[in-house]
Each structure stands twice: as structure tokens, then as C-alpha cells.
Length: 326
Image (cartoon, rainbow, N blue to C red; front, side, top):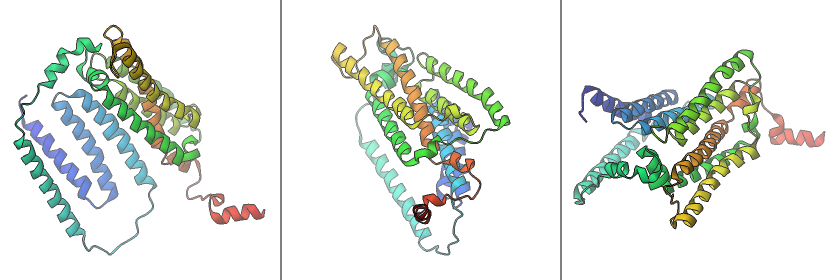
């Protein structure tokens, strides 16, 4: 692939914006730089003909992670003024020196490797017929390297369950009904869900799949709840069941593969295509619910549903003592 001026500008912009996000002092500026970094990184992945990674980066890295940072920025307490600036330059210098030393060590290690690189791209494309799907990226994620995907789902399930345990009832709160927001949600949410289904089904033959579809489902749930639609506030047991089912279904598929083919997560060519589409549908639902649970664990909806600055006295020790006296 030829490298042109646009590629060089994109790479330079990614490096500059990433440096700003790490080194800038203001939290708002750092968050903004991170959002721009996610967009530029998605563009860069697209420029090197990796649309699957570009979609995942835009939806997860820039979308969900960016929304979490913006929500945390909005909810943070006002910063306290501080006059302690000692050691800041030293800390930055040590970090830069450590990063440079690590980069040099990595380059030396790579140069010392004498093994010829394998042409994994051609091998993946050549073996897609046996995987049951025609898109090589989907074949890699759910056939060749499906154990990695299983472990990723396990990590996401643990994160969602932890968010539910920490967030508690704040995850169930919904903004007060608003006619304008509800009308907006009625238009947007169905479109996002249809797009999620299309991305899921298209993943077998072109860029798409469970993770991108799950991110769209999470976006639909977030929009619906922020617009006051109570049906989108999934109860904690139901959310845990949906998220857990996605992992259990994957494990069940692995066991079936072991029984039928003799290999853990092995898929027979005769039914591999249908099995991959079915497991992706279950994973998309679990990923969508898990990401929305993690997002709302911050309690942003809970704050919006109560008057600004209001404090629940019953949640404090003094309030609890007053209730006991009463």
C-alpha cells in the first residue's frame, strides 16, 4: 500500500493528540483530546484497510470509553487549588526516559529475531471455507482464535457484574419523562437497533460482527434511558442473566465442539456457519447490556433524576441516626 501525505498527516496527528491527552493538565482538555484520538485512530485503521478494527475502535475505544470519560468529567468535584508543583518536571522526565528506553529495547529485540514472518493473512483467507464464514476476520475471532474471544467475553462479564454490584440501584434509575426526548428516542432507537442487526448479520461476509453490534445495542439502551424510556432500565437480575448467558453459551459451544470434533471450540464445517451466527447474536446482546451497565454504573441518570445539589441524608451516618431516633 502506498503511503501518501494523508497517511503521514494521520500518523502525526495521532501521535500529537495522544501526547496532548497524556501531558495536558486540564481534565476537560485531556478528555477532548482522547475523543479526538479515538476518531483519528479509527480513521488510521481504515486507511490501512482494517475496517473491522476501525469499527471496533470507533464504537468501543472512541464511543463507549469516551462517553465514560465525559460522564466522569461532568460528575467530578471541583478541583481544589494546589500550589505544589515540585516534582512534576522530574516525573515527566522519568516517564519520557522510561518510555524511550522501553522503545529502544523493543526495537533491539525485534531486530534480533531471525524467524521469517508467517503470511498469516493469506493463510486466514485460504482457510475461510472450512471456518463456515467468508469474512476472514470473523473466522479468526470465532474459529481460529476463538479462545481469545471467549476470554474477552469473560473479562467483560466480570466487569459488568462488578459494575452492577457497585452501582446498585443507581443503574435502575431513569430520567424523568420528557416529551421531546421521548419523541427523539422513538425515532433514533429503532434505527440504531436495525443497524445493530444488520452489522451482526453482515459480519459473516464483510466488516461487522458481535462486538460492533453490541456497541450499537448499548448505544440504543443508553439513548433510551437518557430519554426517559423505563423499558430500557433492565432489572439487575435480568441484566446479569443476559450477560452471563453470553459467556455460558460460548462455553457450551466449546463443549459441543469438543464432543463432536474432539477439539475444544472446534467447529464442524457442516454447521460452523450457523453456529457462528447464533453465538454472535447471543454475544451481541450480552455485550450491549454489559456496556450499558458499565456506563450507568457512574450514576449519571441518578443525578439527573434528583434536584441539583440535593443530598440524601439517609445515606449518611447522621441521617441514619435520625431515622433510628424517629
